Figure 1 (cartoon, helix red, strand yellow):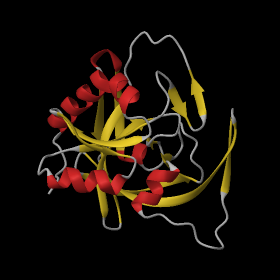
Figure 2: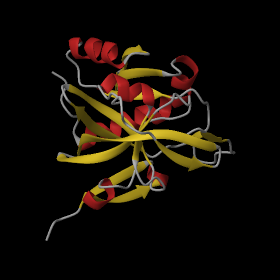
Figure 3: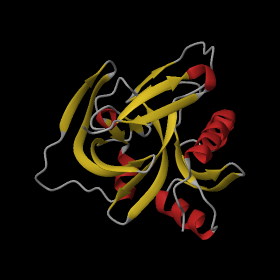
Length: 208
């Protein structure tokens, strides 16, 4: 029953998230929440449980995975703490679909990431599985190495639907969240960051 919010509704949802992010980090660490501008509809460590409860509410909602770390920026397993002059994160609503599982997810837009990222736990709940003979890839980070495998996922941003590759992490780092990286996504859109307005604008690239 849940439908994708309009761009205007998405902006209001992102404002709610930014205003309540510290509360979420205090109360719902390492959980999925389904929410709208009226507040939290459901929360759990299990994605499907949250989706089922939120769908039953007959309300529009989006899903956000609350990381464990407070007042930090997560880049894979690395955490940076800093004095934040403007406490805002460049999140955006993206509709994700793999198989029969669909969710309107809030993702952190990361222009420094080559690939979009799906945490281990989220990938499992979406239905990803590791084949018996599949080899894991290794990415080097400042904090060490992290293993991942490549997967595809169907994304919808501002009503534009496409398939993009994602890196599915193979361990629960405790710091990873859903990241929207450059591959495919940045070819589909010119993305404008307006930090002073706490807004991101996705301009569709016209194919000539």
